[in-house]
Image 1 (cartoon, rainbow, N blue to C red):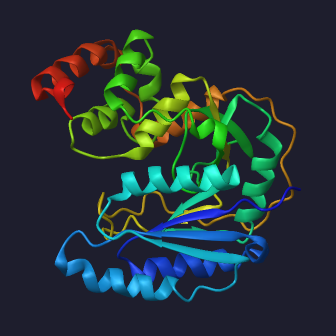
Image 2: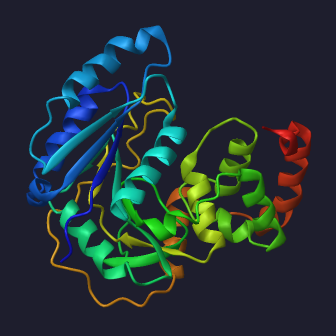
Length: 307
């Protein structure tokens, strides 16, 4: 196996979540051979200053890794800008990276799995990234591929990250021109097209939807586990985005015996299982109207002119 990929960890104003994330990472035996780069965003409001300071005190004394570097943003960059910049920086230096946020409880086998996947598929150009979380769905294959990217514990390589397109309007235009709106919308836990439109219109600043769309348009696949190596503790109304739910709770799998031989093709059966879990069946006529509705909404919001 190649040397362990560095971890880019993005933290903000949740000290208890950050402490849990680090504690569980340290339970991975590979952590001692892993470089950790922590990106700490600055407070957006004065009321957040004390929590940000507490997080920064915590990360200034991290042990259990080969090396620890801390990057403190002098102001509030927001998650999207911080992730895009930080991932770019780490990949330019190391060539590969594992990316985590401050609310990810990892299995003791997380780093072993991620490094094995990054090694296995580095030279396979059809694979754009590898991912560690999976919804609590019974009957999925042990490992499989889906089109696009993902965001709850993931890794990629420098040449694949170069495909990232930050312009959401351009991504939406390309999806529409290629006739891929319907297919793209069925590839994640939310309405993917709606999320992209909201990013264009300024209702969210999601880096993830742009990364997902960039890989999807380039025909890239992401490796997914049938059972999760990650539990997200951030869907508890503590984060900047989203509310509270236990719908995505999982018990991370504690064993990993290696990756099997896999056909590097999308597993459409698994995609439909995930779509059904997240949304349930939908009326086909909704999809036929989707392209027109999205274009009308963009015009209504004047998103074409959004900065």
